Length: 279
Image (cartoon, rainbow, N blue to C red; front, side):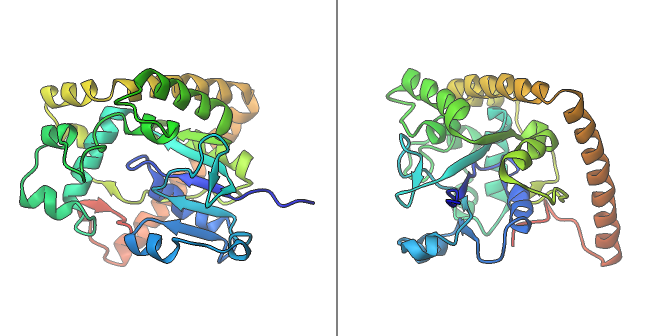
């Protein structure tokens, strides 16, 4: 039997990806997961020999595919999965998270210069240029949505529908897990929320700011709507059996999270601005 290519979780920031990462890591053998997030991660894994890559079953990180026509990474085939989120909420959450978490490389810049949300989504600075405008379309298409908007959106949609082996929606996280589990062979689906802002980010933006973010993410809004419709069709295809699985899964997760909260309280864990921050 020929080994299948590794899965690649293309992690779009603030889509519940850290929560998903923790869950995924429990479902793969030790040493079979390659995480690419920090500068050190990328430096240490700039080149990987084929023998090591053959032992990797999951690659996860804020990465782009090497080739969007062949869906490769490290010039080797991968089975890509991803999560999407309503773009206005995603961008606002990302901005406030980056201002809240000192471990992030933009923390100093955003706070030292008191960069506003409006500046964040409109800036031409090198570090901010692609952050606030149609980032999901850029990542899923491999194209520049500023210079090729219609082509980038069309390609992002077709890639999501035809090339990604699975995808999820942050807003429907539990149903998304079941769909991913069927494709990726996941058995352990219990989770705690990770790296989540405790204060709802929507409360941190004015109507004017939200309108500005929306105006900068028209393509992402169209992509997200397309994803919602495709996702709904895939859930509906599961019929009553999927609905029963989902109800049972939600019940188990609720019990698990309640137990985790009790254990945290017993251990004296204090609540900060970020719930279960990434280590």
